[in-house]
Length: 236
Figure 1 (tube, rainbow, N blue to C red):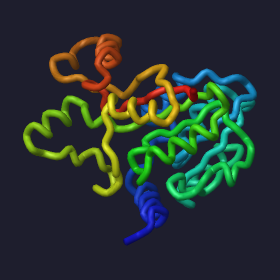
Figure 2 (spheres, one colour):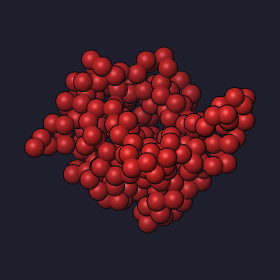
Figure 3 (cartoon, helix red, strand yellow):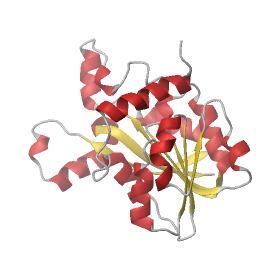
Figure 4 (cartoon, rainbow, N blue to C red):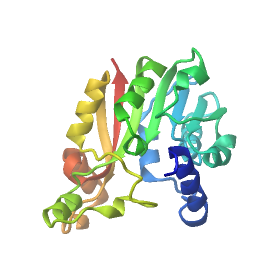
């Protein structure tokens, strides 16, 4: 059985051939995450699971060159693809390694961790590391696929597992979260949720409504309408 690092090295080899995002159109979760942040000119941000660096691209465009961006990823190839977008980049497995040993005494104003937590063996241990790396009152912007989206609920009622959530392999996602279960996890790890946003999808005939109305429905019922949930939480 391959190690986690070997698995994600294979994953990134596949991504380069089959599934790279358009750098001019980053995933919606990345744009939402940037919208949830309010960074000063000298802020320090850690991007965990940085991938090809699209989060850094959006944050740099939004907040300018004064913000210091540090990226870490389990895959050497991902780190190579992202290196020019970060002030500092490292190869690190958040599951088995402690970023504090690599990063020293630095504490961050914000941590971004997008579509990563569901891939980890021990999410609670990873969140504890993130908590330790944040300054008091620092922000955690974290996203996950919502297993309680209305389409997934319907498929489960029909006895079908929503396997399309995996883009590479069925063992990618080791955990499945709903808004409520994720809230409980963050509470247990010393975080308080400030805002819940997401990539929303509404059923027909609601799809015929104006974009603003559909977004309003998603914000009102994120657990039901959110395909991906993006959370802003603060360290307490």
